[in-house]
Image (cartoon, rainbow, N blue to C red):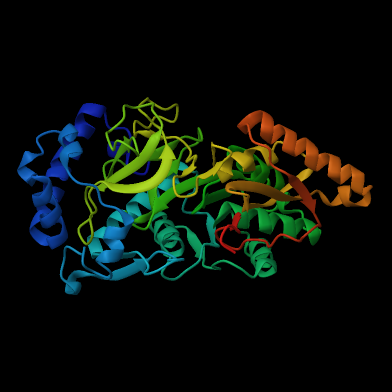
Amino acid sequence: MSEYWDEKFETMDLEKMQAFQLGKLQETLKWVYSKVPFYKRVFDEKGVKPEDCKSLDDLRHFPFTIKNDLRDNYPFGLCAVPMDDVVRVHASSGTTGKPITGPYTSQDLEDWSNCMARTFWAQGVRQNDIFQNAYGYGLFTGGLGFHQGALKIGCAVVPTSSGLTERQLMLMKDFGSTVLGSTPTYALTIAERAEKMGMDIKNWPIKIGIFGAEPWSVAMRKEIEERMGIKANEAYGLTEMMGPGVAFSCPEYKLHINEDHIYPEIIDPVTEEPLPLGTQGELVFTALQRRAMPLIRYRTKDITTLHRAKCACGRSLVILEKITGRYDDMLIISGVNVFPSQIESIIMEFSELEPHYLLRVYKKGYLDALSVEVEAKEELYTQEQSVLDQLGRNVSTHINQVIGINVPVTIVPLNSIARSEGKAKRVIDERNM
């Protein structure tokens, strides 16, 4: 049995891959220019035509697409096909304003399913597995994206969706689920509830986790693996491209981009110039094969690095470093750029702490300030308050040593921080309250 779902593309040499990408890019630029008035207008304003793209490097001359472009063209102004050809519409969670919509043709869904099948296959899922899908079903791409990937593999799907944690555990045990899909924070919620109910989840059939939809640190991955007795894998994606399936982790814990479907760039977010491989910057994606809504040079706001190297897993697909954070999540405290993921990594270094925390941003005079609230392990609450206070000071000192800012850290009562059933809310902004 092959190690790869699609060996041709997953192991394709660079010269052939780039030739394939260029052909698809040229097709897509012509497609959107002729089908989407928005792209015709912005290409013309920039003074470029699809025919000007004679190499992959020429893409740098084409305009970016940003999230506001999608909102300004809500709901289907960027759709490149008649609605008669659209078979499904997803949308982002849309915490503010109009949601970001994502229409799909039947071929788009087939391509998406194959990208998700690559994810499952690379992470050890096979036809005889039972996949418990605790991603939310509905407009959010997670639930149905994972569902269709599992169906493509041919394994059984238990569509629990998110929430009802005790029922998740009952079904996981009774059905003999071997694979769990959820956000990483919800996986920790499940593990914690199992511990409180006296359930020995490590001796259940569950062996694989596929987690995504929010940034998470290597330390959190190790915490999940330790508490659940599974291998914690990653699926990266975004509604604007297809959903999950843009990139997937392999057995070496490397994230590979499905670059035959999605062309990646790294740019300097200030100058907007492309950066070389190995340089950290903002991740930009161009859809190469999508037909309903292919976006050109979409700025994700995600901060990361790309590497080109043959992975020990045998895949030649470009490697995406774990997302450091998002530029719109970045906090500036005492002149220092701070990302929530940095604080999480430090918290996870302390074995006395639980991975449940909140960051509060507030005004201190004219400056922005930050405080951290975090829960300790249950057994620590039987000790004197002075022990908890000292632990908070130790964490604060380590944050200062690593990041260079003074942040008060408070150990809060057990279970006082709400548990997540989806994407965790880590930052409370009190500056305008």
